[in-house]
Length: 353
Image (cartoon, rainbow, N blue to C red; front, side, top):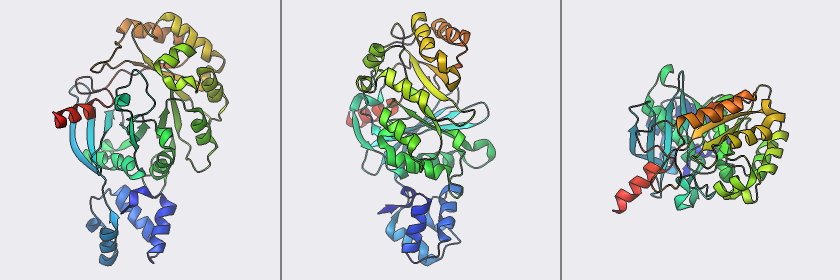
């Protein structure tokens, strides 16, 4: 059955026309799905009973079921675990910032990239999420929060389970839905796609005129090639040098920067020498980038450790002293199963026990 949330606006219009309904019905349906965020077709009161019955019979409304959630007592962040129609599970994280809510969405069940410091990759890639499964994470969490400007999710980051650009078409379509003026109406500036650095997919995204302009974050995590290749096997073919050359060449809107994510791991990539090498990599184009330092978030069985705070601040200072915009992103939800994929893994272990 068709899930209407798999359709961008043009496809939704085509669906409506194929049913023999007036074209404006697409706007009505989109309003109920994405603005009102209703939970059933019966709530779409400006559609005829005949149209609603057809939608009930021929389309699927929801593809996610809430399994459980955890809320941090330290910072209020909430991690949701969803069950998909095929029984697989995914996570979504809601983060309370100073003046807004940010939602971290997943794009795959598992991940094939194989980063050594990531918990999600332990089971490998199971499958890509559909567009609807991505979009419904936003819709369902916004329903959970409730109405009111103080509860509005304004920022979306594709930084959950999976490599977004390895699920290119569904991620692209979900961004179209998030940013369309008749659908979710979110700002292009408030959406960020995070990639492990798949060169041809990054290039494709910037050349694709149908891919809405959104911000890019890239997992760097190293100051030289061998170090990055150890932490991120994808760097065997998507080398650090080639990645930075690409990032320095792609067009950026005025005032926009590419975010470089750097997971700080104790005694692996957190030394002053690493910071100085990173400065040398970026200094000629420092105003094109900002660096997010992310102290490693330990998980069961991890070979790595979190660096002490003074080492984190020392690393940050070296970058700032060289005029490279740098921000520390302390982990949210450290009193819950905070590492990406950890709540999912815990649930699977409980089910299979």
